[in-house]
Image (cartoon, rainbow over all chains, first blue to last red; front, side, top):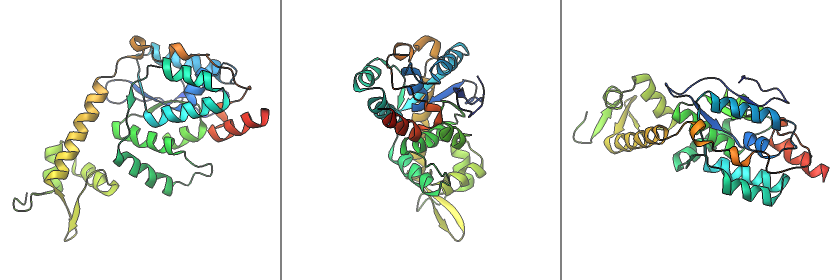
Length: 147
Length: 104
């Protein structure tokens, strides 16, 4: 598992939350895993197996689930998107109102030229709130904001 | 603590929350903990302190209930279930969407 934002490489940043290794799952990693024709599908599979082997605990948010469903529906197709939603078993943290207010403030103050998605911003807020430094993600914009 | 108004100083709040005073001030600046400035000093209402503690317990509870990925295998059943137009999500989500539409 490497800390990198380079294209063609799925990555997870390296750190832990307390004594338990925990990684936050971003929608980009979900898409890379689900879409077998994506350029980083194989790298994402290997990164996922690495997290599993290293004893990580994985979780995501309801906003990421929504974003993943939207990306998959529009790019891979509605059938695969529905199957993903039905068959995934990630623990889901439900973003609260305070998280959303902080995400809005984060987007408003962001200097990113690409622009953070609202799901990205809530993910960063939740990661900070839980003290989670690791992310299973392949989107360089998300990873650069998370690092 | 000011008992009439149920207000806590930063030092009191830090002790109750088992955090440093620097952390409590950061929570206040970031809006994670509701407080007010009186005479240049932060004070935290007892209700806000209680809400913060409850939220912290909920967070700890969520984290403590997470199972190891090797037990849950949460994404095993969705690996490779779809086939898109041959895009590259590691270029970013916006580019991913745009590339997919161009390829169709």
